[in-house]
Length: 478
Image 1: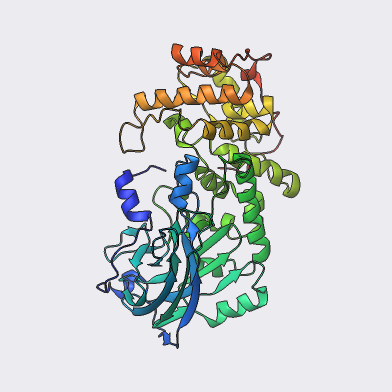
Image 2: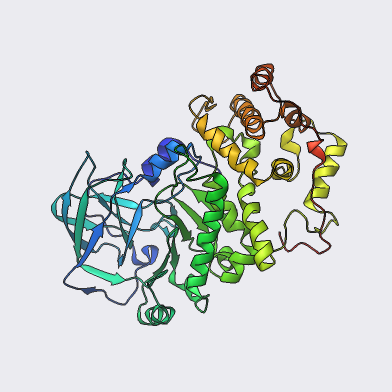
């Protein structure tokens, strides 16, 4: 997906505190108000936990997108324009900010003009009673992003007002039978599924379409996808690679995303309804969930080794890592090895392009397979080591950012390509300058000299000839 300007992004999706003021109610139809009235109870008390800021994790890991969410679900829904009273008691330590309350899951609602609302709406809180109202309504969250991983701050909030309970399945806590009863008992517009590594916020009708799933098995499978990708990235291996805090936030788009099946963004990934089968079913995630693996892969990308021709390529190492394991366990078909409608596999297409001669990497078909050649030669540990050494070198690697648009210019791409050549050579302990040049990458004399200083030799084999054999079955992939 393309990125908008960084300034616009941070204003929209980072959960910075904003003034808590009553908002003008939008139309019921646009905001999704239902006819069933909410009930005003005696209040719901919630412990808010300070958590390392998701954006701080992105910065320290050098990531392209913020990988996790700051949102902490309350299990409550508020209708458009309803006024909540939030009584906050907080004890702050180490200069921590106050927590905020946030209304709405990103990318799940339209405004009164039919435009997608791609951000949550945070409202500042002060100690004592706070009045909060939101024009669109939605799931209610708290957020308390702090810099420390071990904050000693504490806070409790009590919410009173007209709220509705969200049907919620929490892995390890909720029984499937009870969840099914809640789906029948509660007609709240949203449903949430929660596990150790994932928070799923989908529309009620989207979940009802697959309600007979084993939701514990579904969440365990999604958690495994995330763990496989985290392990490939080397998270937790050393001080430069801490595991990001908080869950990945997967959200259901209300309909189909214009021009895309799914998207990755800062603090969430979004899925069109055409993708729901591959996100909300156990079989879909296990045997056909490439779109899910792909979008989560985006949230592992490191900016400085992503020239624009690699933006949709480096992520597929994460997709392939999941696929290899799910092929072995669940029989998922290998995407690169299957036979397409043209009678060729992805590998066949790549080898044909190589034999015809490559002068520009941007023309390489299925370019993620070029990185896959290095994995075939040096093992999966090469990918992990590549990410590890890149993080270790982050301060020394030039950024290459010359503007605020996601489509990097030629100068920026050239800088980032040099980072790729240098860091892959360092990770493999092999001089890969000619390998990359052979695939149409411009390698500067300065980079060649820098790689020579590593005192590593050239490959002992022709890396550009590495490939997997085809499987004699038609591809199930688009």
